[in-house]
Image (cartoon, rainbow, N blue to C red; front, side):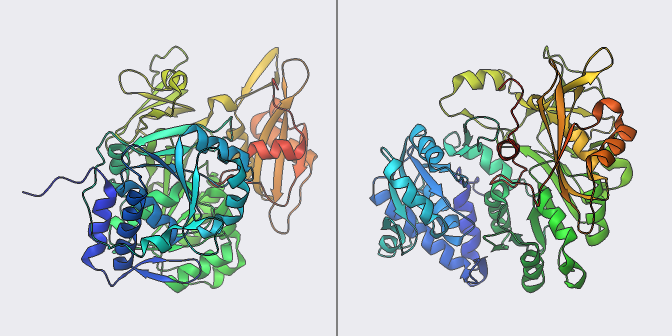
Length: 520
């Protein structure tokens, strides 16, 4: 009879790594190749050092990092010590980071070498958090140097299934950052629910700028005895070069990054035959881009829809990226619910709606959050007594069980039309605009207009060799959607600002363009 899986999935990952200690497990952005055995030894040494410093079950330990081997090992060591990981996403505002660390009761913050400049700005802002670093050249104590004096032998891990694995910052793009609590049981379910066909064994390429998927996909790959190739900064030419050089079998890309890879002139002369999966996630992906990507790479795209709060929800498999499945009435399918995940669509009163009708997407899943950190008021709004979680996304289910996400409920605009106001979903207009040959990327924003109505502002990045103007876009959208959907203004940018999770940053766009939000 086999032993039950550990409550802490890190123990299982390290057991897999220890079976073949000589193989490559991590390839660093600077070219270092780190064996599976070295990852195991370094992780246990670091975990022992944390325990020596008083880190125990139930404590909060922060990690500010990029895509580095040091950050992978530190994340594992925090879990082995029994602490909850406080995951931070990069931000240009150290004050926000300091506030989040303080609010989550962080006693200790670990910083990897890519974030030392931010750490120096953080130090005078922290009230009760001690900063330690994961390499020399530090603004604080080098924890890895201390860890080298400890033996790499395992010790009993005290984590329980219901304990917090992590508290993740939501990033604060639609308000102040909130802490999402994820239990060991929920995270273990998510990473053990492995996507099919990643390679045998998988060789995962993680370009820079994919913070939201880096941790989980790293763990999934190492659980399958694979190798993870880390890149610190996203660059389409570097991504393609690494695919060819490292014979990557799977790459994770946010849709804005997928678009840049498909458009890269290097693609035509790069050997990408090793790829068996391109995982895209994080935000809506235009149908036109998906069709171009399938044309460039073949039927290897795997779409994943999920949320920090709800975990992974659904997947659109490679063979489902056909014209009939991808799009219905302008909306793009995000696939069918994953095994063990229930999805339902509800109206404003909480009643379930009929197939094909629009409403708020509700999810019930073993991978969902335990709740928001010290925000019972938000918990009561989002988490329902019978296990359902309200996502705040607007969508519908079709007769085949495919889920279509239309918009965030809070991202709905109201424009003048007929004798009243018409509801407009920016995501719908963004999908339509993505089909224009002159547009490489776009975002739609609402700004105060006449009376209660909003004006539609379109932000555009031109495709190479193309140009467009406001009159052309007004005609294009009017022909597709009708006169009320014509934009009032066009803004041209060389590229869209992205959040640390690789999504278009609409808050940054508003600040850049000086656009007020309705009600602001």
